Every structure is written in C-alpha cells, then in structure tokens.
Image (cartoon, rainbow, N blue to C red; front, side, top):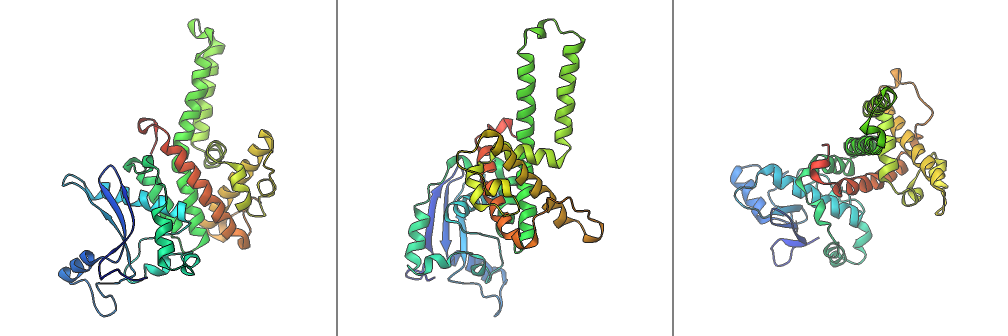
Amino acid sequence: MTLVNGSPRELLKTSSPLGEVSLLLGSIDFALQLVKAGEYDKYLPPYQPDAVFLSVVHSETTTVEMARAVAVSVLFEVSNAANLDFRVAAIPSMDEHWRKVDAYQADGDEALQAHLTSIPLESRMLDDGLAPVVETFMEASGALTDGHAIFCYVKALEFVGATVQRQDAHGRLRRRLASARVLAPDAAYLDGLLALAEKAARVRTSDKHMLELTIVTCADAVLLAPLAPQHTRALRQLAKDATEKDTKKALQELAACATATRNMVVHAKTNYVASGSECPSHQLGQLRLCLRECSVQAIRWLARVKPESRVL
C-alpha cells in the first residue's frame, strides 16, 4: 500500500455522534507525536506508510473513552461488512494483522478503497453504550488463536444475554399480569408469579441456559448453517424451509457446543471433564467463523434495543 502525494490516504470516512471518523492509511500527525515523545528507534520507526489509523474529529468536551467507543464501533462495521479482522497492534506489525486483504490485491489498493467506501454504516451501531460488547468482539476478531477467539465471541454473546434474559423475563411476567386474576390474586396465582421470578433467576445464573436463550433469540439459523462445523450436525444440515422446532433444536445444539468448547478452552486438561458437546480441535476454525457471525447478529439485535432497556 502507498501514500498519495506523501499525505495520509483516506480509506473510509463517516459521521458519528462525536464528529467525523476516518480510516487512514499512514499518519504524519501520529509520526510527529512519536518523534516529539522520543518513542521510536531504528527497529520502531515513527512513520510507516502502510500503517492504518482511525481518526476521530471531536469537540473539546469529548473524552478519550467516548472517542475509543466510536472508533471500535466503526472497526466493527468495517470488519463485518468487508470480512476483515482488526486488532490494535504496535507499529510496524499492524499490516500483518490485516487478514484476508490479499483477496483485494489482484485488483490493487483502489479496489480495497472502493469496497470500504461503499460500506453502508448503521448509525445506531455508533453508540458508545455498546462499547463493552463491541470491544470484546474486536478482541475476538483479532485473536491469534481459535480458542481465544471462541472464548471472546462467547463472552460477547453473554454481554447481550443479560438484556435478552431480562426482556424474556419481563415478557413472561407481563403476559401473566395481563390476566383478569391480577385484580383478585389468590395463593396459586401469586405462587405462579414467584415461580416465574425463580425461573428467571436460574437462567440468569446459568451460563449454559443464558447462552442458549441468547442464540435462540438473536441468531438466524439459516445464515449460520453454511458456517457451522460438522460437529453441529443439526445446524449444518438445516434446510432453508426447516420448521420452527428444528430451527430451535439446531440453535440449541450450537449453544451447547459453544458453551462446552469455551469451558474446554479455559480449563486445564487435567481437571476438565468433557461433556461430549465440545467441538473437535480440527473444526475450531469453523466454529470460530460461525460464532463470529452469531455475535454480529446478537450485537445488532442489542443495538435495536433502547439504551435504557439494555443491561451492560
């Protein structure tokens, strides 16, 4: 990649609640700051023409946290739409983590820039309230191992799961309160309300049940099926006209696989007891791709929820 007339090349520009956001190839401003601070040497030069930066133009009242939240949201959108994986890296190693860029090299840098500039960004994704889950997604996107990526994607789904669980519990409670019996509640009716609250508490404290509820609520099984590993047979073989029952079963299978595989990744082999739902090691890359798409769908579901109704 090269610079145009020695100036930073703008790959993407969009607007955000804070101001203008640009994806730049090369940054003289950043290089000057490194020189001023003395943070460079012959192994870490202050200027790299192929380094990628995010520029956020903002007001004086904007905090670093607010700017970073918008920055990661933009990267999320670009990563999803252009099928590129990003991670924050020290210069000069940024370029090596631009995965899948080679697909554009045959047509030159202009093809990549044209693709980036044509990406429709969803304005509600540029919301600093989504920062925790989007940052977790970006960590997964740039993970060097499949295990680390799967762990982070499941964590992102769990972020969404807190809101999913609360909305599900509130929906059940509203339906029960819609009964005429609420005007003259007897012991049986009150016991039923307590049972609903207890069930919600069990789901909230169970990673397995919360992840299952999240995936069943937010994910599109038909879109996930081509990405699913062979291990999740019900999802992998799901027909486009599958019944609601078969679709739910396939998503439950994915949730069980994701939970078990995450547990396998984070526990030492000597004290981990396999459940049988774990994804085989040679299929972890496929599960990673599947959970990536599943996380994207879940985050977009969360973005459609009013900020005051989210649990983050």
